[in-house]
Amino acid sequence: MTPLDPTALARQFPILSRQVHGKPLVYLDSAASSQKPEAVLDAVDAYYRTSHANVHRGVHTLAEEATAAYEAARESVRRFVNAESAREIVFVRGTTEGLNLVAQAWARPRLRPGDEVLVTELEHHSNLVPWQMVCEQTGASLVVAPIDARGDVIQDEYARKLSGRTRVVALAHVSNALGTVNPVAEMAALAKRRGALVVVDGAQGVPHMRVDVRALGCDFYAFSGHKMYAPTGIGALYGRAEVLAATEPWQGGGSMIANVTLAKTEFAKPPERFEAGTPDIAGAVGLHAAIDWLTALDLAAVYAHEADLLTYATAKLGEIAGVRIIGTARERAGVVSFVVGDVHAHDVGTILDGEGIAVRAGHHCAQPVMEHFDVPATARASFAVHNTRADVDRLAAGVRRVLEIFG
Amino acid sequence: MSDLRDLYQEVILDHTKHPRNFGALEHPTHRASGRNPLCGDQLVLTLDVLGGRVRDARFAGKGCAISTASASLLTEAVKGHTTGEAHELFQRFHRAVTTPTGEEPDVSGLGKLAALAGVREFPVRVKCASLAWHTLEAALAGASEPVTTE
Image (cartoon, rainbow over all chains, first blue to last red; front, side):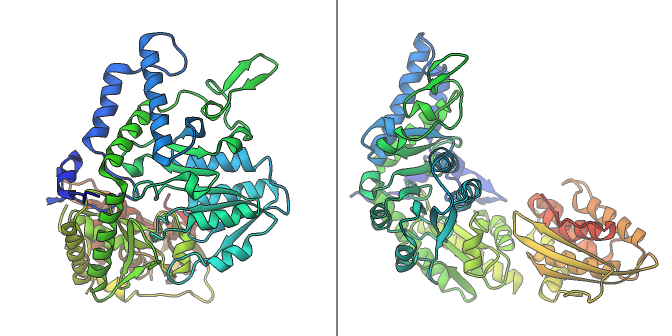
């Protein structure tokens, strides 16, 4: 494993050379959305300049090139998550759309009153609200596996809440608010024993670690491109072939059909069945470029680098009197959440911004997690391949400035 | 950006750390709650209005320094004034905090509230400063739905 050179990598991100409020930008908000390296920007630009046309429709050269680029992107996603077939990869707008697709197309026709959907307490709203909605629609019940004081899912409780009534288990690979890495393979194995469908929110997994959907043993795995250096508006949903084949169409329109008469439509096979309308072709091209770029760095090295920053940040912030780290799970990735005395996270965010430091401040679309820790909001620093220990030092200095102002 | 001290002035820090008129009136004539869904800030404003004059005002809730100080300053500013004067103060205040960058805000008649004019340099924080005021308008209008800044 070759260690990363974050300083050299930072030079590949044009945006990182800009200043904010007269100070060099320190970007610590990649968990909300990552910045884009030249390789991705160039791929999208070149696609539009040379090969753009609609996909799966024309017989002309550009249409063929665009289709080839789009399908090559699908194959790159297959390799990236180690799916068996590219037909198991559905392009979506992002994690949220992927999870809603599963809730509405797979779960809604199947759930009955008395059935249960099991989620964990640390879910992002995108892996909670779609399940609340489908439970409301079908009369099924939502069951929640709680977390402990560190921010780990209490595994005994999880096992206890799994039952013959559990039809779906929906869980995050990595918590966006706390960085907790769930033991997905173990949790999925338990769920499978009960015959439940396993749906994983992988938004915070793919940017930081090698993902193997077959080793995880999940049925669905959804992720967004924009948190892993690709453009916004593109993401992917992996669905195990057998499950995807049995999933009803979601949206109707062009591309998702096999044959249409005024009376009746035969639907296309997956993945086209779930891709009605013209897709985000340029986004897929950008995602392909991001996957090539990220995997060339070696995801083991990425994980090691970010783990080092996490440890360093936890120590540096932890030594400041008044700072409390929220979430100290056994295994964490990517993010450190914290509160500064009784200063509200938005004030922390504004003051850090004044120092050129971008962090997320708020409830991180995970209000139940905030409630668990009895804080209205936290500040959250999240790490990417281009971040350095010097960035963490700037963050710690910024936090001291917060305490100075609020004295 | 102007200096952060322009945003976090002494009067704001003072009102954040020691909010005035904090709590709820036992027998309010007017009451409204306000929320800022983006931040999770929430507050409840209770008023005692007699003969068109605000006799007492209190607020409770939690929020950032800007929203807490704004609510605290609001309760001080409206007490003893007519509802018409309170409404006019809201309009003056709103104009000041939304004055475009580069223009000088008109802070006349705002008294201590002028300290909040600094938020106009921080567009995402204007909502924090305005929350209490929108809640005041809702309370005086007798609104039953909570107001939000969204």
